[in-house]
Figure: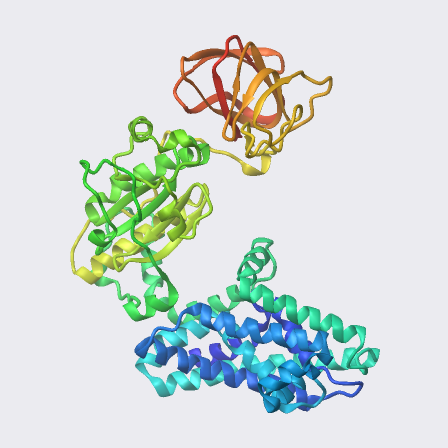
Amino acid sequence: MFLLLTSFVAGMLTILAPCILPLLPVVVGGSLSGNNINKKKALIIVSSLGISVILFTFLLKASSLLIVIPAYTWVIISGGILLLFGIVTLFPAIWENRLLARANAKFNIILGKGNKENNFWGDVIVGASLGPVFSTCSPTYFIILATVLPAKPIIGTVYLLSYTIGLCLSLFVLAFVSQRIVTRLGIIADSRSTFKKVLGIIFIIIGIVILTGYDKKLESDIIGANFFDVTKIEQSLLEKNTTDSNSNMEKVLNTTDNKSPNVKNIKTKYLTIAQKEILYQRAPDLSSIDGYINTDGKPITLAELKGKVVLLDIWTYSCINCQRTIPYVNAWYQKYKDQGFEVIGIHTPEFSFEKIQANVEKAVENFGIKYPVVLDNNYATWKALGNQYWPRKYLVDMDGFIVYDHIGEGGYDTTEKEIQKALMERQSRLDINHNIQINISNPSNTISVDPSKVNSSEVYFGSARNEYLGNGNQTVNGEQTFTLPKDINLNNLYLNGTWSINPEYAENKNVASIIFKYSAKNVYFVAGSDAGVEVNIYKDNVFVKKIEIKDEKLYPLIQDTDYGNHTLRIDIPSSGLKAFTFTFG
């Protein structure tokens, strides 16, 4: 009964979801008609949308049992129809074209008038095209699809109807109110008016946005901007109904008692494979690996680790953000490795020198990494995961699903709790007893950073990305002679002397120096030298230390106790320094 009510409320709240907000102009604009309020037109569009949601749901469920219909098929259908209607609205005379009329006269009459006043089938098509899109924006919808329909088709259908009624009711109210506002303005009487053309452009833009997948990025940006996210409210309602499977586990994980819980005594209902197929992405296997470390030279795959909980850690050894997460990953591996937990470090290089296995092996040893590391030199696994960040953590459960992922640094407590939950599911389902430690790890060799106080971003020396170069020519390969300007600006890179600029790095050809005014606490330098070179480090013209640079890696230059604005100077007495990037903390 509670899920029935939740379904209705979720349907009403769906119109406020970040993935729906950009589409509301289609419903509002498509339901407008002349200078009179047209409740019938709004009702047809909204009802068609609701019926489309229901039919799409049953088709999706049937297709998962009989045939596989790729998800992008629905994207193409929905986006394509909206794009077509936008063109019709923007250019109403297009359907008078004889070439189109030859294709199918009756169809063209219906579709050509589809966005004109009081045309029944046009309104139906507009509403129906949005059904698949609206269906994918509610956690409740997926719960109904994944858990209720397979087990109890009749009850699941009732819940689906409740969800759809709530959705249609809120959409009808929105369309009706919008009609009253717009008709009072008297701007849509002429079907060829500027307003209609603007509406057509909106249809076209939204169609393109759906077809290109940009709607997902827009949704992410809305959520990232801390905009009101109604799915969080809906999720909280769901948790009241489904928390029985997690509440007891959370109580155990949040206790101050570090003793291992007796999982057999915890009444927990875990998702089935079919339910996970709907809610999660399956982890792709490791692809086109170029080398293996800490595996005795033997290849490893995710397939052979099925049944274990696996943390995939995407990193690269010269990345300071990656380095700051390693103590936590090392601690988790040591703590849970005997309880069905594995870590695979996926080393995806940013620079060419990071593709050399000997360099990675040396870094693995220096960082005290004991878990397997694979070389993803061609970004094959990176791309298969759809990743864009260093570092990134993907948690794969015993069934091979990505049940949690985290971008960047931080979130260590949450990540470890997710590991514990996945291990407890494994322990419960396999009916085994492990002493799972439920305290939160606190490694001693960590570096804390307040990102809000770091006002300098990564700066590259190579021509491929040297947009912060303050003197000389940006994005140009070859030898340049630099002279320092009178004024040094914040977050601009200044070189002095003769340098050979390559796509990844800049190499000095004689006595040279580097000047950079930064706003941070710590400064790091990715550099190397074939023969080795000793450089002098100055902060605000005060000598700090000498550093010998040889191996291509990350070197700490400045390690302060507080954040602030300072000027870094590096004096290089001889040629041969390869400078790749500055990073800050």
